[in-house]
Length: 266
Image (cartoon, rainbow, N blue to C red; front, side):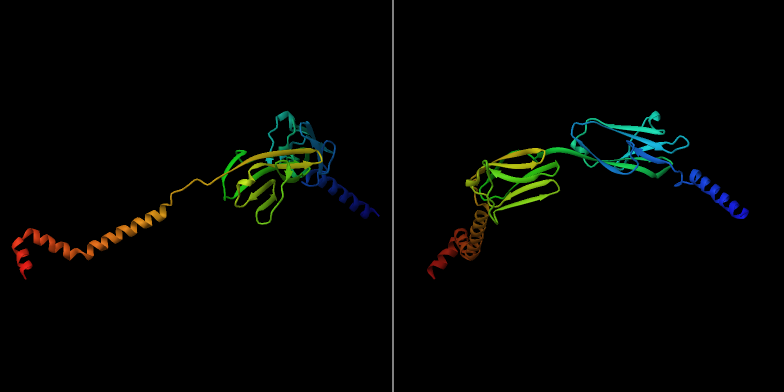
């Protein structure tokens, strides 16, 4: 029995040493707001949030480090040991899906992560001027950039009515926060106000585009004119070449009358 007891004692000492001095076996945990497992926290825009990180089960001072996504957060010296706090005030839609993680500095594998789930009504923006002038027969694309949590249901309106989609005429594209309406070969009857509408469980938002379809300006057909001029010039050149002998003969008569008389009497 004595050898067995001795072996158990040895294994117990090895476990105690490993748990206190071997990285990964320190027994220290990281808690954010008293939670030691990764989790999501739901907040609203304009709220404020305080995240308190604490070393748990530590037997000595432990240095803590914070990351927002993959970037380290700069902390004051008094805010780094055993307990560390970061604040977000106010929360904006930019903070949605941001990841805050607190790590044990000597072993970054010991950490806890919080993902922010920020709720806000739809936010819409365009890529430029909302007053759009196009010419009859041109193609036009209206772009509506969308941010929303929860996701919004998107639709297009024209002059306060749901836009009637025509195959081959209208095309709607919705991906990665971009909602577009393309209209092919636009006509003057399609003048009007086009509205991008976003509706979520938290509210709605819209963005208007004022489309002015104008007649195409008269353009002088430059290419046919140039082609015609080329034909005329080439014709003149060939005409001169074909009459070259007669022109030379005429010049000789003027410079040598006697020769001209001889030629006339023959």
